[in-house]
Image (cartoon, rainbow, N blue to C red; front, top):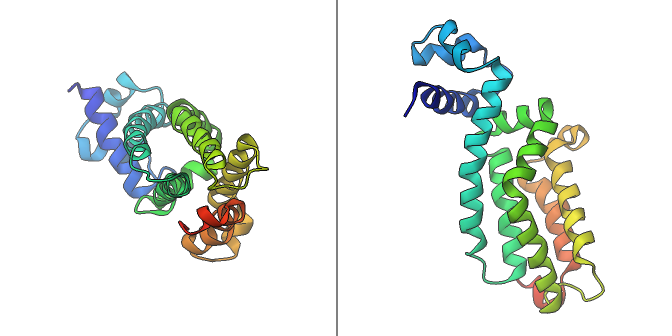
Length: 194
């Protein structure tokens, strides 16, 4: 492992633990015992380091989601698992990190999500199609529209300041938006899995 790789790994852990906004270059290099000169040898600035940390982080998460795709027993459970896993990340132990990422770097996050999760998202969209065909979701629905609506709801839960002002737990927000929507598109057959 190169010194640059070590800086990326340690910095990623620092970002995950403390968030992005409050981490300065000085705070990031302190546990590494390196100078700012060494830091600038590898990175243009904090955002350059953040981008490389995010590439590492999202590539690891992408592998996890690919594994999870194989774990579903039906389309409803699969869709719920996909969004709950994302939700655990956005509001879990690294919630400060994801809050900062959503609030201060939404375009960067969108770029990385598209790069690393496009395959998972395409698979999830096809799961919606399968769910319609297999009678788990209502037959008049269009898979593209359903999936895009789920993404919009999810994005609003994680990024919308109005929802945050309501001061509900993330689980309550999830239950009252995305899960309620999924329940609404289910047939009787699909609803029993929510």
